[in-house]
Length: 284
Image (cartoon, rainbow, N blue to C red; front, side, top):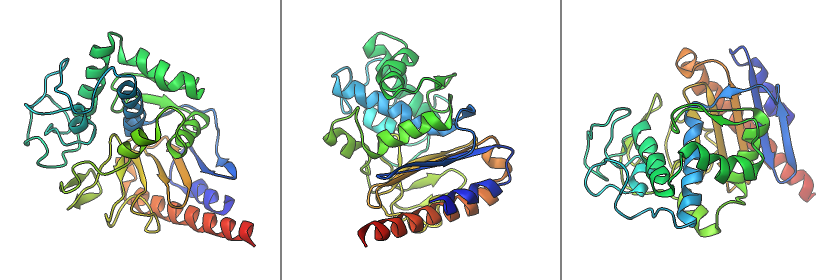
């Protein structure tokens, strides 16, 4: 596995840390305790907390929204899958509900506010109790928007990637719903990557599908799910290969986007090649 991890050391950033999570354990490179802004990697973590709230009966994915303003007919399912019609930011609806995949910080923020209102506590408090504390993410905190404001370390994000790979906090049916394409025929744009038709998305996580070119590797299965962040961060889990990856950097994505969109897929493909080799070695 380390052959893939060593690729991270050459990335054009000041600091980087990365890890690979498989059934054999965790391998990593970089300072495991340095805190990074996760940016949009916050979205899957926020969605995980909301899905815990769904299992607890605090909110329902398909009920009318009661605590936030949203377009008529929008539900938590629409908000979490970028199908509610909100733009990237702002309170204005720019598309009909379930008409286009409109990547939106506002939608995720409204979803967090809906849970907070129903739970009668701050989302920060609920997130800590539902996700951070049970997973042992003691160095992780929400600083602002639930869509982009979580800061964490490699050690803690590995704990979350492990949860994404083998969930302990969610029932199998909830997990399956979360990582399955929602409103699968919708077309849309993955910011800074391209327009895709269809543009599959789960609940708080992007689903790889047949998107190409893409920030994940060409060898990733269509079932791979994850996210990348504007702070130069990325993570994914490929359930077919049974492997998860996280990479954190301290350089904003827009400062090295051309390099990132070449280096991230290269790293992802190397991880999958190493995983296949390790599996074959164990089978022989």
